[in-house]
Length: 197
Image (cartoon, rainbow, N blue to C red; front, side, top):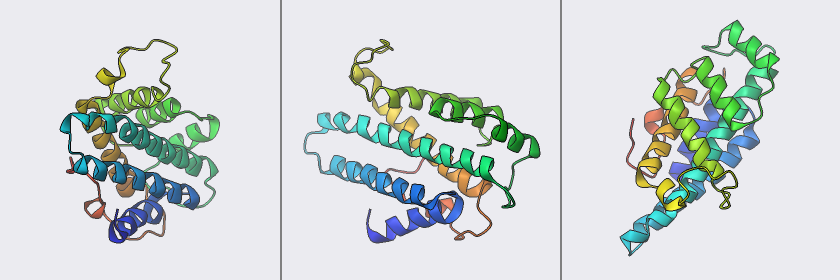
């Protein structure tokens, strides 16, 4: 990312919805890694090797989404008087009563309360992205299909990861801004691919 893109991403994430600013800084750091991988793809002289970049991109996008969900969960749980737009008292009570500490439980809670205002397919794609992210462990100890990673980390999965990332950023910005926000909109949020939404 160049300085302008980095500032726009930071304003959108840290300036809008992230509760713990250091997590926001780390998200931007990891997003910069994703951006760098996309830049490497554009410089790759051998197009058949582009597929080798897909795994690290998907793993990083999933990690960023998990961090956003964890931060959001903590924001709801630790809330005292800060306004929480678009969150009902029932949802707040559910988050305060249940300790969620894994990507799967965050996605399940988001789906249970439809906090992304999305259809079932979005949550299914997030669960799939979670499973893909878990395959960063090459040994695949539980023999999850497909056994060949090259069949798992494909272009369709990459596009789905990009879409999931966009939906999460968009919904968090629109639905759950903090009381003091930067005024950023998703239309100004930079992505290193052609935007899907």
